[in-house]
Image 1 (spheres, rainbow, N blue to C red):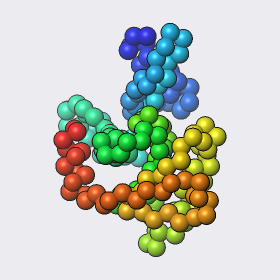
Image 2: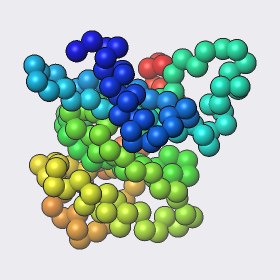
Image 3: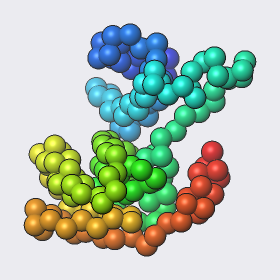
Length: 178
């Protein structure tokens, strides 16, 4: 299938899902293609409440790229761990991120705001796992970065705590990846 047709297909699907997509920016990747089937991952962001991305802020310049921190983390992890299918949780600034990675592609994520004492994030992560357990029941590994997951419901998983990644090292990685 030609890229122009895929783009139009994705755009039409987003229009059906969200209605007006004037404030939606999106990117897609074809992850599997056969004669009869096309598997696509679509990443989209509603920029309505993100004033730094409004068109009038470009000062006549073209916005080249908006990438989510989650995608950089998945890319970074793919260079440092062998699994291609896993759950991952990490904290960055005032947010905790829960990711589901399948074939080294981010397929689901949830972001929660951090309260001062970090209460409740393990329970929220368990709910995240529940949402995807049927389709991804073969995934048994959870990687964590700067997080402790303590819950009896995680006994069916191998929880691996990764060594700390400094903000400086991560930002250097992001700059190099562009």
